[in-house]
Length: 152
Image 1 (cartoon, rainbow, N blue to C red):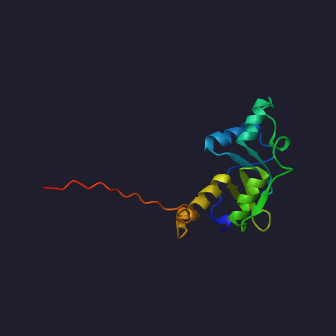
Image 2: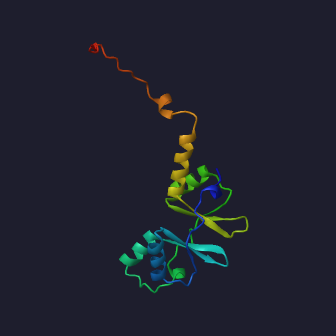
């Protein structure tokens, strides 16, 4: 399945000159885990709840702008036609929870999170035509030798 079929498209965005305190407010107000930093409709970075926590712990001033703090050198973007298996591989190999999704022109389209992938894989497994346990575990049947009491 393509990431465009299950990615989050209602993701919050901010510009590179947005302050960390404004981004923290976006995260808390919208109960989300990342804000994508966009410039001219193209993603240039991402700030996550973990980044905000590290900024707080490192006593980074809350008026620091996103551009000075965001994850940008290793921003991982995928296209809208990327398959779920490839998304899962990237999340696992890069140790990230969010992948920025772009269209064929590099314009921001949404975010695919590890939760999105887990939900999609779970739904896919439920739709699979058989239960995997039937093929991997030997089936045991308990037989009782006690006679059931007779009804009168």
